[in-house]
Amino acid sequence: MLNEIDIHGYTVAEAKQQLDRYLDQLPLSIHEITVIHGFQRGTVLQQFVRKNYRHPRLVRTMLSMNKGQTTLLLK
Image 1 (tube, rainbow, N blue to C red):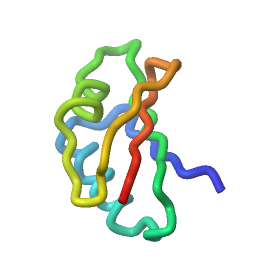
Image 2 (cartoon, rainbow, N blue to C red):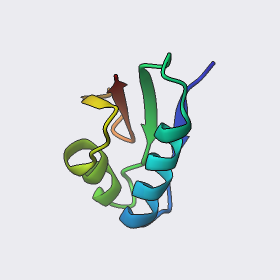
Image 3 (cartoon, helix red, strand yellow):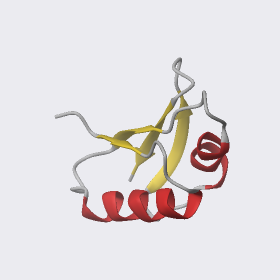
């Protein structure tokens, strides 16, 4: 099962809402997801996910070789 969420085109507020909802509904047995935020049309979402996003399940963010995505490690 591929655990990813695509937040392309969202504002930061919308992206936070989508990420929160996704993580709240994600089974506790899943400990890693990929967030696809893009980067070619600006890095606002990339910076939000990598530096500012907080959630009770979030343990750490991991950069990807693909600048348009970030991996989140979860409790």
